[in-house]
Image (cartoon, rainbow, N blue to C red; front, side, top):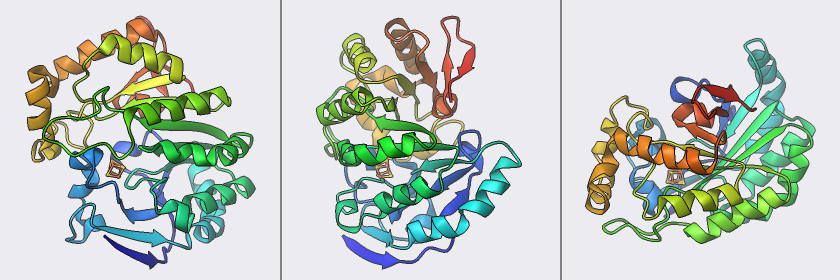
Length: 293
Ligand code: SF4
């Protein structure tokens, strides 16, 4: 693993494409991801982004943006003004790395950005993570939540501890559930993102468990969810083959519909699908969308 320290120009990137309706900006404390060789890294859409990888294997490098907090402080006013002319200043942290990597607890880039947000809060912060270690920052998250709208998204793609043919989870299913419960008990708005949706052994039990651990759930299939309309990016990876071996149907959208129905039965009014869910728009019982935040 090659870890390097780098300076970033403007850490606030104006969103385009898939994220545009979710937040005005994304913020990456790192370039690259050391979870890249774990299960979530197999289908990770960032591995196909040559601007990020620059020819390097996904999971083999990490650039630590050590001046990220200083960059946020320097640019937030201009970016906030730009965003507010179009709506609100929302930050998605992070869309192409993991904010709570093991290296975070050495370099503390995400932590320093959250501290900068205490002084200069966005209107909305979406914290997106695959790691239970978000709870190491629960006090800081509580402080941020007093200054802006905060949604904490924890990805739990399946109830399976292991998917045959794929590497293991970077953070176990149980630990991520425990993290969600803990944050929710503290009063933080917590969303479990089942993204990308993988085969689920016991959907009823899985969504009952989510209903207890989180405020909302978002379900996102790699088809319509990987930045291509037909999932062609993910179809080039080992993920669909492994999914098919567990559940033949799981690689089609009909599977997502079946799972959404189970989720709706267990969490009525608390289910979002695809990009609408990431944007905080959830289905009502008869399925039009309502916006929460
Ligand atoms: S944690 Fe996120 S960015 Fe990192 S490999 Fe997994 S899906 Fe990709």
